[in-house]
Image 1 (tube, rainbow, N blue to C red):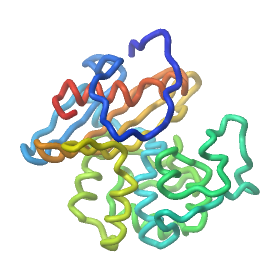
Image 2 (tube, helix red, strand yellow; image 1 turned 45 degrees about the horizontal axis):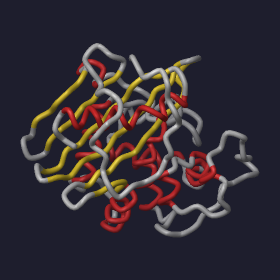
Image 3 (cartoon, rainbow, N blue to C red; image 1 turned 90 degrees about the vertical axis):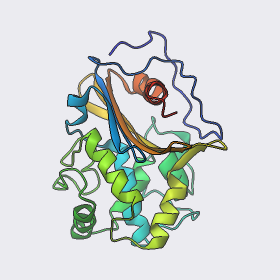
Image 4 (spheres, helix red, strand yellow; image 1 turned 60 degrees about the vertical axis):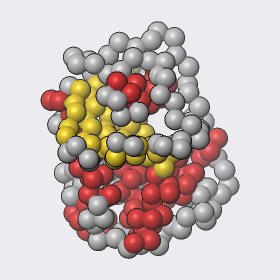
Amino acid sequence: MPLLSSLSLAPLVMTSVITTEATLPACQDGQACTMAVYSERTQQWQFVNKTRATQAYTPFSTYKIPNTLILLDTDTIKPGQGYQIDHARYPAKSWWFDAWRKESITPEEAFKYSAVPLYQTWTNLLSKPLMQQYLDDFNYGNRDISGPHDKFWLNSSIKLSAVEQVEFLRRLQSHAFKLKPTTYQAFNKIFLQEQTEGTKLFAKTGTGPVAKGEYLGWYVGMVENAQGRHYFAFNMDAKTFKEMAATRVEIAKATLHEMKIL
């Protein structure tokens, strides 16, 4: 899809104010992107590039949504507590973000900054049958975790579409899963990324390479405002991680703004 020629890597920080004045154009029909939105009050869907919205892709770090639920529900992690990456198995790389290099990382920080090696460390503490049991209950995408236990969500076996991302979030918010009440409560606090007096934005990014010179990026979540709750899932293509990181959230927000959600 056409992108601005001059891009800079946007800082991955949480703000207290939702920015609706996007600096990049919204996703448009015919471009290599999609947006699927379901509004709870009207019970209506909105799409940009509907066909792509039904195509299954690797979730990358948007898998941290179900993964965090599982980790919380099994008491593998606790909100606010600090954890360490298993550096023997996942030694630090030159490209790691500063937030990944901290000696102690909380679940809130790990989710916000997509600390992949810490989530891999945590996932190794869970058995594959247990993980499968939860994902079957979630009906999460194709539920295929036959890939490597610590990275089946990173361009491997498990896949889902933008529509399936939205449907999963709808079931989550209706408490349709066999999870403890405290799991739902703790996760919603982690999921919340931005808010104003009248609007809350819950969201998760996800990005990674799917082929040489081809990256897939996600931005999924929900918006709560005066018009009710709106679930969304956006994905797009880009040639590099830097390009994707600098544009995915801005384009998604611009699209939500154009749809009158943000």
